[in-house]
Image 1 (tube, rainbow, N blue to C red):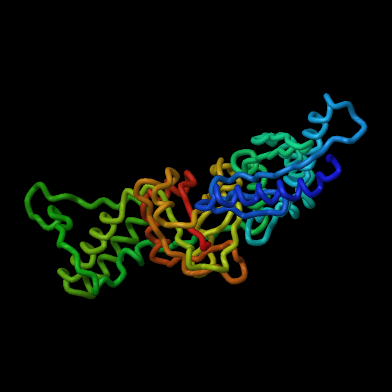
Image 2 (cartoon, one colour):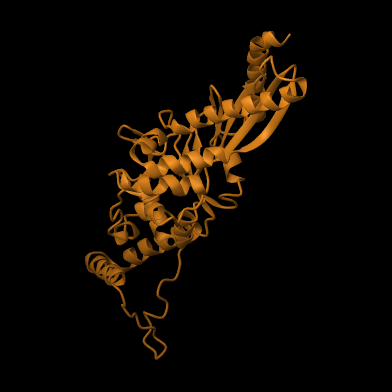
Length: 346
């Protein structure tokens, strides 16, 4: 009987939730009362259920039930999206309240959600509406996020400090440094300083050569060269936060150094729209993440050291990792292309 549909609706909802939990077990999926948020794929799915009024002709019942289910799914989608965390300090609801432009754009995106499932049985229509958190959504919220605390600083002022760090405990193969610089013949190479960073580097090397035996300084530099070359040509960045249980999922999480300076994504990335898709994707397993096309085939894996103060969507990484990120062109390119993943705790 049609009026027993409330019990049937509950059963349908329960079965749907069980099905989606099983199907998406390996992806970072956050279940909601009216649907789910898949943080791995960046897709929000809302479920809707509806029945037709008793007094309509039989030929119209399915159509009206489907329409009622759509409206229910739209309501659930709107409720879920408003609760999505954008940054540690902001959820979508706050942006909607503060900006009519965000409100209008969000309403248009919700109305444009795609129907990815449609079923009718026992007078009950069930639909699934999905909306992507990529593309238009990111570009809508990013400028606002950039204005609300996404400031960055010159977070690595002196790269030479890391290059010349003490490496007494590192044992690596010897390399030949400046092979022609020590020669006295006409083929001797000449070092030309043409920018402030090179000047700073040469000054520091000169100080080291005056303070320590020449061979000891050369050995230190050789070790740093070897370390750099063996850790180059990365295809993406993987932040391992699987041990950070306090981390909270967000559309725009931040990576910081120990002092709190924002390493990624910075305000320019967001304000200028350089990141046209989500800044990061999520996974539960490091092995699965490494195989993900977003960062394959050789990601630079960085263990997260914790969250930054009370900002649970901001992860802290070591200064050494920050230095390597800054020094490598392939890693800088990966950050600029949003080739970044975060592994989270189950």
